[in-house]
Length: 79
Ligand code: SF4
Image (cartoon, rainbow, N blue to C red):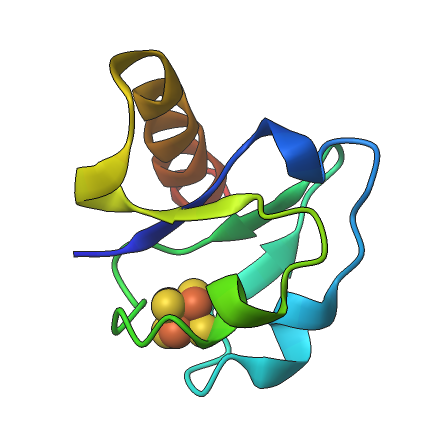
């Protein structure tokens, strides 16, 4: 399981999530921050500090939000 950063991050990119992640799996991308779904340990620390409530657990995503998990997977696959 993993947490996923959604569209409220786009244009905000506050970045509080990066410093609280215990496994250092949040990386800044060109349009938003991304969580590496292969490394995330599902601790929810990032969700608690996000000022725009942009982070959701993978299994709580609405169907139209699942594209953000796909985007994260592609982001880390291409690094
Ligand atoms: Fe990092 Fe925890 Fe957020 Fe996963 S849920 S990205 S491990 S802070």
